[in-house]
Image (cartoon, rainbow, N blue to C red; front, side):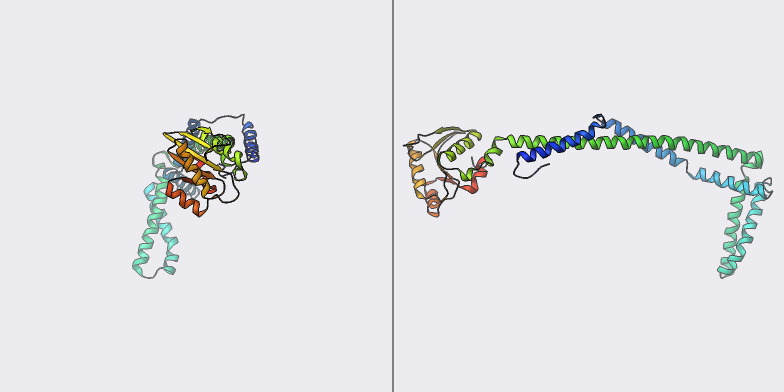
Amino acid sequence: MFTDDTISAADVTRARQRMDDRKRVWDRYSCRQVRPAEVTEAETRVREGRAELGQLHTWGWRRRLAAHAVLIALTRVRLADLGWFVGGLIGGTAVSVVAVIPTVLLVRGGGQALVVLAVAFAIGFVAVSGGLFPSRRTGAAAALADLRTRMADRRSRMAVLADRLSGWERHLATLRELTGVEDAYRRAAAEHQALVDRLNDRRYQLKHANWRAMRDTDFEDFLAAVFAELGYRVQKTPVTGDQGVDLIVEGKGRRIAVQTKGYHNSVGNNAIQAVYAGMRFYQCQECVAVTNSRFTRAAKALAKSVGCRLIEETDIGDLIDGRLY
């Protein structure tokens, strides 16, 4: 959002250009509005699909792959028709024999060597017996065929699920892209409207008017507009014979005598004396002197002693914003 304190028509034009650019991008999607429920549903489908696909890679699936590999290996060496226990003993012994040489070379101490060989035997026994166990009733060929069927079915399910998941992921990505395009347009539109409103705002116009260069009646008219914007009724006094008061401001339980001084130089005591006397003449409860310049030290001392409020160039912004009245 635009945050600079000053805004020009060029800023509004640039904001309109950004809004139009975002709108053209959104037009490519036919200005489709994405409902939050659509995104939620797509995210749920993707999350569930990933979870289901992950379940197909669980330990049971890996165990079937291992059993399949063992059965194939045992079939190749013609051991597949052995009982699972006998086959396990043979497999464990074979692994132990293979492990003897690295055990002798790497392990020092008979106790540790025996432990290593026992572990090797256990691994071989579990691997071979696990591979033969599915064939204890149906035979190796039938068990191998069953494993292959299950694996093929699992692969088929994984392929279907992966394809479905890919489709939902693409759909979710499209929805998120659409949401981003729509949000970008709406942010640009809001920025443009905020700039237009701010530029058209009466207080903004008053605050950024060239009030520092105003003199005499121009500055008087400017302050009349400021007090009117703040909700006061403003009455101008005659140009001649005004008794030191240019504006009489009424409202919010107050009647204020205002003297305006559109000056380049500093404003002295005379302005304070005049507006204080004019306050009595016009039966006001308060008096204030306003300048787009500054007051002298003597004027400030006099104003303090008689209770006259002073507003100089550094205070006019606060006056327009309603922080003083």
